Length: 326
Image 1 (cartoon, rainbow, N blue to C red):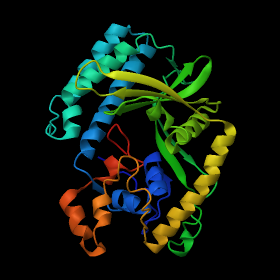
Image 2 (spheres, rainbow, N blue to C red):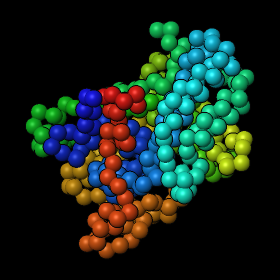
Image 3 (cartoon, rainbow, N blue to C red):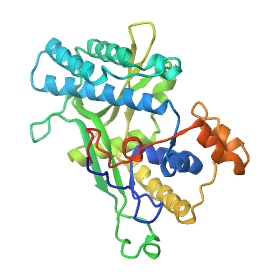
């Protein structure tokens, strides 16, 4: 397998290629970004959540492609589930953990079946690209008009490297005569109005709206969030919400992004990643809270005892190809 390209400028900790994950972390807390992206620490449940999410997206992608080829609904479900069974047949998780209890090979199959039954008559139809291919699992990578400001003094000859924004769009759809990016979410928590409200404002949904507009060279109304609540008692629950984005909102997001990336460059060039101690208890509580609560001299021991080192390529690298290559 070809080694995946690094998102950092050579010989530095300056990240020039960003996905929504990295941006979310650096905006939340520089120390959390350091532990996750720079140092590669992850909880032992992260691999379960990652695998579950990838299988969910792959299955719904398979179904959308089949339907775009005019394969009947029931036949498309059959083919999708057969392929999913093949991929997860040997997937074993720790079912004594909360993550493994809800997210395992049986629950992913049940969730996909329930989703496809729930949205069997979905008014949102997959957008067909000029190539004739359905707009599903679209990878994007585009340059910004600026790059790291002071990098040339550290790595001569790299001053012209622009920042890149990268990622994947689950699906682009036509809905009531407007184009939307569609993003699929899974949760073990209730998906009521409070859950949907979190996506406006939202770094991820603003990036996806911008990426859809640039990739398709067409107006994007915003993002449709299809959220699934994974339940132990079936059937699973689903809800659909909307995160609208205007042109002025996207412009403001880019203006703010210039500031945030400059901050990230400062952290990297100084190799100092300060805690944002106002965020430790937010978003359900930071996984590194206990580490940051300990004295600085013992934090490495806490990290080694409670977390695992991850492969950046698979977990957080914006250049990583979900299909398994670079």
